[in-house]
Image (cartoon, rainbow, N blue to C red; front, top):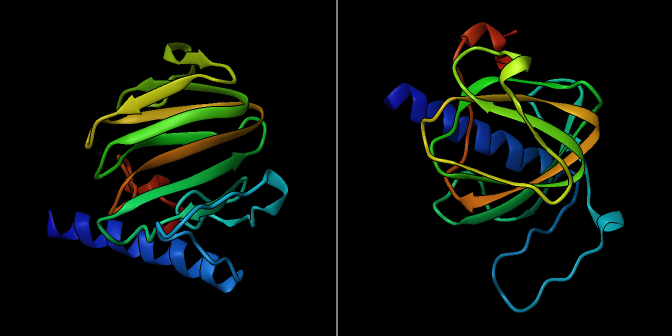
Length: 159
């Protein structure tokens, strides 16, 4: 468990560092925040590899505090089986997300989630999916946040 928690915290620190380098001033719960899609700053997601980008809107993913971020996935991007340390709440904003519960990637078992769809998964519940068309999803919850792949060979941080 300690190794898993360390991995989650390392991922959160990496994601925060990447967005800090981009000059993003994240919302910290003080006053109002209003942002348009063209104001988001996108960067690589080290824990997901090429074809995925992240824009952190609020929160420090390594702390026990609320967070909101978006993921932009290229057409056909595969989200390999993984788990998270906290509830994952996903809203599909663009494209189509095909998503399923399970420890092995199987396109045929996914559910099609078009724009406006919501998915909520509990901590430790394995999941996977893929994007159809350029897909943008928004995730929110309470940190610390991270990802652990069911098969360590699927984790781009291990290459």
